[in-house]
Length: 261
Image: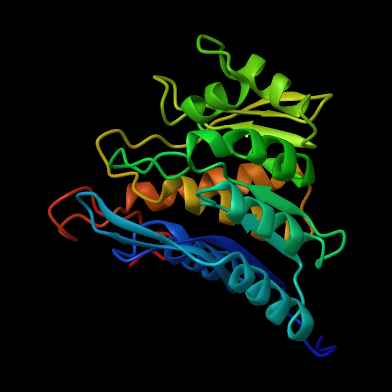
């Protein structure tokens, strides 16, 4: 690893969105907006646009591990954001890849369903995500449907969901509020339960907002922020990105705009 690097380097382990709205494409934009160097280990290639997902092709476990090993050995990794994993072999490969990185902060965005409704995580792989990846994470950032799928609590609210998820082994959880009427995120780290609010922009496209939020949180950790402060900064960036979402990019919901284009 280079000893001359001054800027934090953050690794996104996630899927590729050919439409540029979510996945690693959104992650790299968020990393740039936060002032960190972004790197990728691609877990799957999706053929998608603003309307839907047409095809998903998984990357081999060997290639996933090789990507992680390549950047870790040369550049170094100051934080990790994990997004779309897809299936059990991918989850096992990522777990092995994390073993190569040492004690770096990890943000898990438990991607299960795309904005257009496509299933991005096999149902039979959810247990592996919870047992193999979640306990390795510093922070996880599920939305309310994802948090309910992880916990099995179909009617629970954000505070209860966050508490149960932390009980599964993650250090802190941010249950995001984009699927609620209040748009409030709830942070819990085993001791503190904190509501995180921000500007709300109903009617604006949120395609890629979850990826942007979790990537910004990982960038904050790489820059030395604590989990709560990083979550607050991430909410601010995600809110700005939604406010400036790019109408007219495709015929469906356009991507969020982390870079203020």
